[in-house]
Image 1: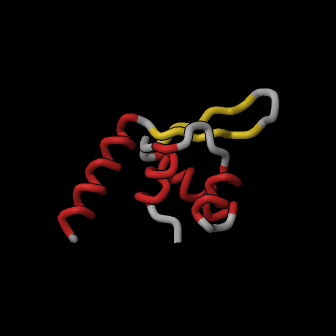
Image 2: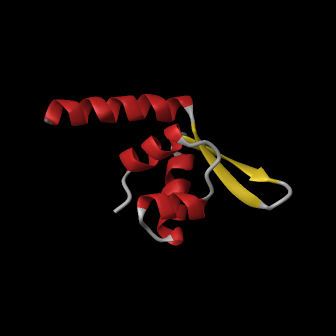
Image 3: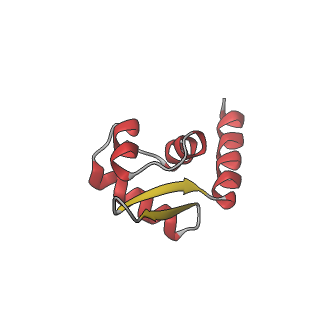
Length: 80
């Protein structure tokens, strides 16, 4: 299952990933990755940009997303 933490972690490590790459890296379907990316884009945690040549959307984590990632990682650390 793809989680917010997994997605933010992935996008913090790799820039300009498309939905197919996110799905592959997180072990989910492209449709599930697309929904996760859309939800987190709407929340301002990631941003998307259209490649005008390929007409493919690429995603990157925002500063708000990096702050949320740090917060989630801190919570995870405290639970151990």
